Length: 239
Figure 1 (spheres, rainbow, N blue to C red):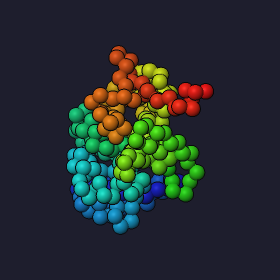
Figure 2 (figure 1 turned 180 degrees about the vertical axis):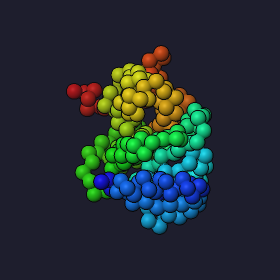
Figure 3 (figure 1 turned 90 degrees about the vertical axis):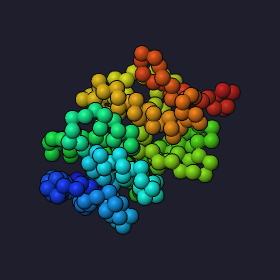
Figure 4 (figure 1 turned 60 degrees about the vertical axis):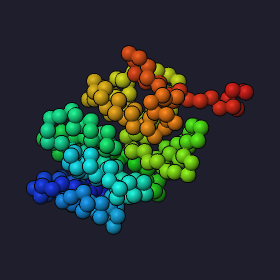
């Protein structure tokens, strides 16, 4: 049996009921909301570990002023699902800040596997998640709390952004192919979907780089993929 609190946001009553049946049968605690506003009220009252919502709601919801107030204070993750077979919809949802995307129709097994994968990447407040802190000029990246601190401001990293960044840190200054990144972070089934990488690299550059249009750290390697140029510390340089 699984454990975790999941909020399902969908205007379709039948769809919400189907998702509730699947999730509660697997041991999850489930809340329902019929609109983004209702969902945000649920989050502000009792919180959740993960939110599942329809893709066109996702793009709107995560950009609202209310969401920006709530999300930085929580470890909540987002999974969007779409009814159209549209790559543009998928990329728009990912670009809006969701952690994963599912195309309908999807099986219960696939849904549960994606949920489990996302929840594994969320550090628990009472857990012993190993913390890694990296300093980039005026930005301090804490992978344990999924936060970037910059000039007194806190910037949230999604679980997927954090996982991708962790892989870059572990392979700093080494060119990494699209296929390797996709397989390591998204799994073998996504090894040809380079659009995923481009979306998340663009998001990370917005959060990490002083000038995202002229990156210093997250560099494109032509015809290969990307490389994270980790600054050499003074101690390392002197040693």
